[in-house]
Length: 632
Image (cartoon, rainbow, N blue to C red; front, side, top):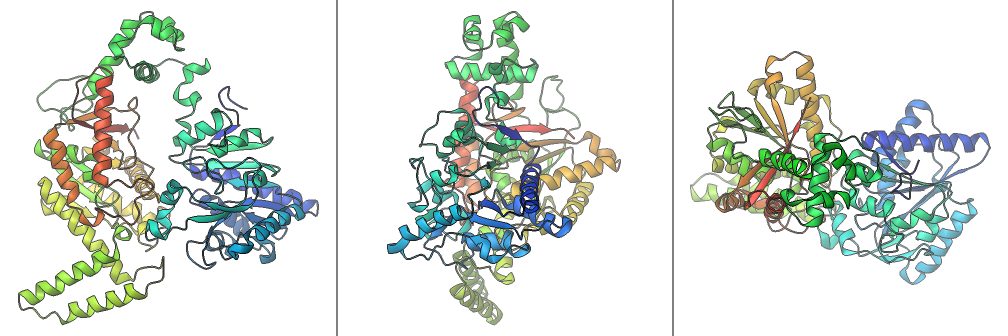
């Protein structure tokens, strides 16, 4: 069923796993239906991080439930140009790694645009690709992802609705978004071969999958006008297209974000807070300045009926915002403040900060981190992964040079260090583009990040027994692609939690990092706490879990439950703490589509949160770090 605001059917699934499983079942049912009719099943396939779970489930269906792909013909959407077929970043490699090598599809039925077609003959080859689709009977089911600018395939904004398979220029933000696949942005091809929008629109059925931080563009595509500036919006004109999304994406849909506009909502405190904040920011008026006329003219007449008086509504929301602000993240000792986000007792508290990478603690909640320690709490930090893939090769040789020089300076035999340095130089010099580091180089890169994290903890004031390097196994693949959460990850985390028995836990609730590490780390903590609670560990019932967001995004202000203000001096102190992580400064191997340094992102994000609070009528602070509580 299509919502009143959505011009394309949108189905929301509890997680990407469930959404991917649904799409896999749709594909499986279609394959079996076509096989029963003695016909081929023609699938249009996509690449990128979004369909990886889909392909994993299709492989499982083949291996465990006997799903055969012998009658399947596939056509992939796109390929970088130029690129060697066997390059690790090519979509030929991607598809064979994630799907084709694990199923019984006939290799002759696999069609992927070539990154090695002669450029002078590219039009001919593209026309032949479209002709092959027609000859196969047309695409029965096309799988799509969506880019941050709304592109489908590599059809960037401005692509014609009647475009066919062709060579295209990649937009800079698309290249930035895909830079994590390559060693550096400069290595990302500037061209690609892609099916055109016209080719895609000829598919009999389309399922577009979007998970994580794609909410804004999905809302534009599903609810906005049809425009070539948002290529995915053209799918509104397809007779059988459905968007498959998760709750994170759904938060931007009108029916979720502003359900009062749909005429179907039950007013509780949380929804009232969201509605009033949205109204206040929309009109540019402080919360206490909103009038009954403002409510009536902006779709909130029902709230007035429910609450009777506009000013009473204003006051209630104003107090909710005021009460979320505190300079005491672990609770204020010897104080009775009923509406305070945290308990006053016990004091001091044992606080455990889980940091997915070795710098997320200082980047995401550095001001709060320092305040927790300065206020006398026992603060521990658990660095969940080594972060070794995010260190450049240059840093390895730089630090090995230092090790050799250090030993030479103090008359220590540096023969072994020189051998390691020379071996590292030789390996790096011959490393294939996109190739894996040796275990030794990965270990050195991990040590570099560990030393930076230790220096940060000492900068804050922690002692050696207060920082813990978990190096969770799921991360240690040496590749961008990580393993799923495993039993060893959970057991190791449970052991640490039992050892510390914290009163407070802080962990990264932000799911927008480019390669999913934060999500796995969060799942590990959640699963560990659920098991400890089920096991009856007494301390668990008195432990509160607070979620922060990282360098990539911030909580919606209506969701913030604890807001920690920072003075200008505290902002600078946090910045210097971030600077300690020199391997992540200036040029980071995998920093996503945002080219700003992490300290710049953090300061802008914290300043924006403070400005929003001020715009709503609260005290104007230099910066604010924000948290949401997780209940288990």
